[in-house]
Image 1 (spheres, rainbow, N blue to C red):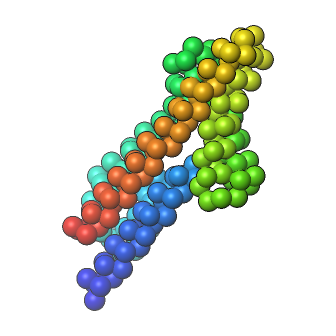
Image 2: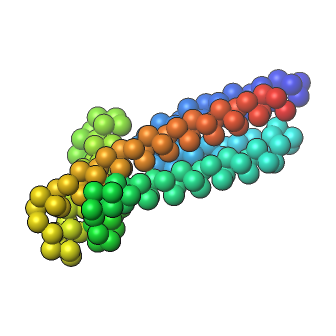
Image 3: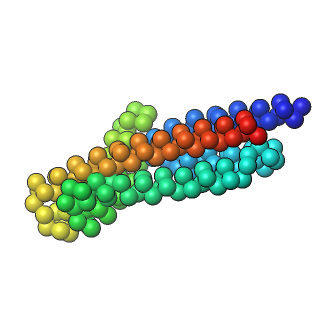
Length: 174
């Protein structure tokens, strides 16, 4: 009977991993969702995971968070952006993801487009408003921020996939 319940727990972790990857694409905390479900399954079926496996996944999730928040700023900086442009890209990306989800009600498309557009517009606003840059300079920084934001979502989604695979495999091998 214990074997059957362990397989149910593995199935729950695998399903949560798929949901977590989709949540990450929506710029929501999908990595943490996967880890939370794994912890709940570990509590339910003690010994389902080695604790180092969960700790490794938590470190990966933290790296994903850092990448997500820093990458659009990095894109802005690589195209000559200033500190206000980088901050604008981070804030704009968050606001844009939320607004895009509601204004473009196509699953994933609205959130991703909103995040990229928001990061770009936020960077432009920071460059024009605070740094007094020209429209051309500001637009270049905005493009860099938008590309950086899309890259960040792709990287974090990959990290979510790795976390899901590690935890599902870990549960199967336990």
